[in-house]
Length: 199
Image (cartoon, rainbow, N blue to C red; front, side):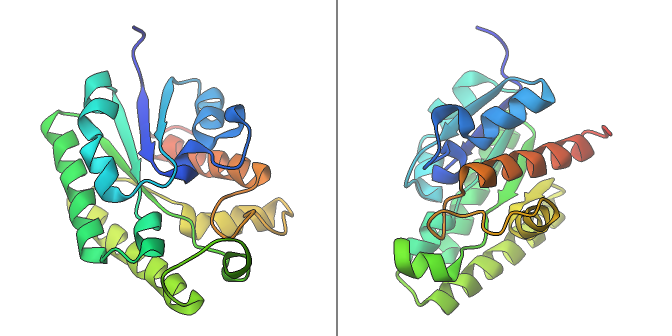
């Protein structure tokens, strides 16, 4: 079995929901970076679900690194943020115990207008967006204290869309369009190179 450089563990945003199989951002990023990425995204998964499958989907493969991004479904489903944060912390500690360096992803912000028309949330649109912002702040604080590198999709996604002249990067308020996934790959590649001291 060929060595895996990076496992990407997450939900539908990692899996590539709504795009063709080869259009998921981890595949695009792996191709651009020239590394072997194993996509372990699962549609509809929560941080707790990711934690449950961490042994089989991450540790079993002995990757050189693991990228973890979850929590968006937790917010949409009304799962308390404290529980989400605890699940994220458990995954980080499992990786660290196994000697696998961690990169944490910060989920995209929702498009409130599209979410109301095409998807769902247990909360009002305004409160849902506020929860995504609060979760981002927790992740940044947590990673800062533990010196864990991050990929801040929530901050960078609008910037990259604007730079490339893309008006809307989400198809239903939550999941990216094909162009949106390509932009996510660009964001990840830029962050990954910076984390590893590459130009």
